[in-house]
Amino acid sequence: MAARQIAENLDYINWTVLVGLALGAFAVVVLARLRTPATRGYLAFTSACAVVFGILAYIADTGLPATSTVALDPTWEAPRRLALVAFVVAAAAYTVAVARTRRAPALGIGGLAFGAVVLVTAALGWSAGPATAVPLVVQLAVLSAATGGVFAAMVLGHWYLVTPKLPEATLVFVTRILLWVVAVQVALFVVWVATGTGGGGPFSALSGQWALFVWLRLLVGLVFPLVVSWAAIQTARSRSMESATGLLYIDLAAIAAGTIVAAGLYFGAGMLV
Image (cartoon, rainbow, N blue to C red; front, side, top):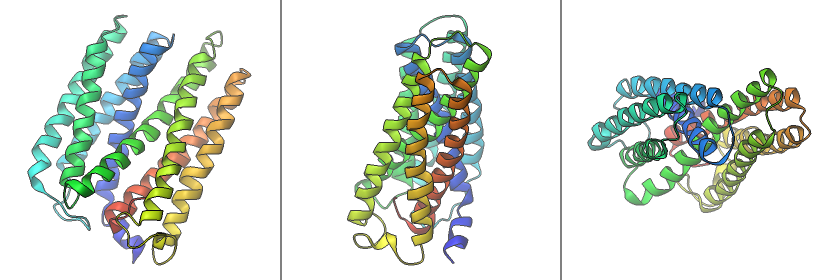
């Protein structure tokens, strides 16, 4: 029964993954552009990937069903899609600017702002009201940061394989941010479960029909990536870039799986984990 409820909301899970890849990867590009000596090629390529993910997310958004286990408010549908289009346009313009060796911080920050609007309008449209929308915005934000962040880190690892003389500081910086994002997710998991946010009483999520998925979320989607992200930082520091890239591949698979489970639990059971 639990698996069926998750399967019935695959469209919303797909939206969450695609938006996460788009917004998270773009955020890494903007931050790396401002704080690191990351190469123009890497920044432009990853930003272009964010644009593609954003377009796919918009296509997925237009095909979302009108029914779900959670409450749906169609009032926020048009603003959400408009913000998603604005993000894609801003990200595309930023990609061109980066390719032309321009910093364009206003474009980058503007794209992030539009991305934030996407998450806020999604939370308002997919929750029972403002009070429940706030934790959902937080959840969507950290899922995006982790999913898109690990994708951007994995791509960066590949850049070192073809350009071995690049300083390791950029990969260490990006992977360290990823580690902190996953750590925040672990802390939020404890808060969500301890308070029973969206899923019954305190710690009730750890037992019952959803327990298997909750434990998978914790062990496979959070604890394991936390360890792998730490290991990726250590190998990057020692300039073992092949090992670091391999670890980031594993990290991508685990974090993506965790995002899918977390989205499935929310849209299938109204549960935040």
